[in-house]
Image: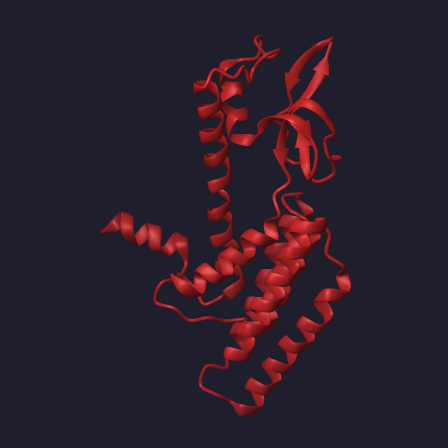
Length: 232
């Protein structure tokens, strides 16, 4: 397990860096890591250790591939995120823990990462609330927008003096008036450029997948732990 853990950790840290820096991951990067994963599986099969289960391994890889790429084709995240989860399921197909609903490493990593991404809208809302409290007119030009739209946009992004980097626009102009654009799927949008714009950050999801992976091995399946906490 140590070699698998080191390999998976190195892969996720590497692609997280590339995601932060470029928001693009070359496809060839998955080949050596996936190949190592297959080697690890073959070694386990030859050694016939007690934890080796061909059925569960196949189920882990199959479920991960179906869920990861199904979610990708629905437009919720990029192809690199799906490939990272699939490759991870080959390197470490199974991880048994008392703090998890199931032994499928990639699926628990995915659920952990999705929970951790909830910290982003909470941070956005707090940031915008403090900005309003300081007297900043973050809704200048959007006075006619509904109150609920203003609340929603406070969770989604912020008003940038200058839009640069990996951010998407949260506004559009209709009939000479500014309107909030609250579309969920922005994977195909171009990055926003300009000044004094409402924007939302293009999240480097691979970073959250990496955090979800490490949190799985440090504390366990976060959803399982939350449910257990609520029931006690």
